[in-house]
Length: 213
Ligand SMILES: O=C(CO)[C@@H](O)[C@H](O)COP(=O)(O)O
Image (tube, rainbow, N blue to C red; front, top):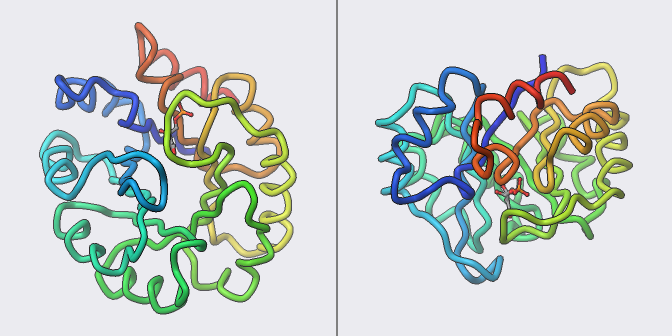
């Protein structure tokens, strides 16, 4: 079943609780973008924000770590309420160990890859992943244009997975009504959407549109 994960990066941080509660009945997950100004050229939120969001909703929190040395912070984010944690292949020299650490903490583990990173990097670790996060923009900012070649990458992950149910396939960046349909047709099962949902007058209606994809 298709899951919709609004990204709070595009929410009004001055009214974050209201923004989160406004989508909680309609979304399946909440996506939380953690950026450090090193792995990506932007700085966003830390465990305190995750803790505040945790108190505002019962939805599973899908924390996307766009940081160097994520191993140092996994436990903090898990304690703050992260249910799913994805780390970047490009930031993890010992990805298998990092994924194992996430599992030891009791969270679902995902591997995220930038547009320029081939999905083949994941072949040997695929059976250990709960989800793969295909970036369809270069990470760092909301509101960017969908990178069409991400579609081939989604299809390649689906092929690599074969008949197995896991890892689930998540896509993030530039998702709107049109790109959502294309992404789902190529294998996406979790759609992350920031500006399309939180930039709208009626975020709930936008979630319903994405669900039709
Ligand atoms: O990780 C990121 C950006 O790096 C995303 O999660 C953004 O939050 C998606 O924003 P939109 O492209 O949907 O506006």
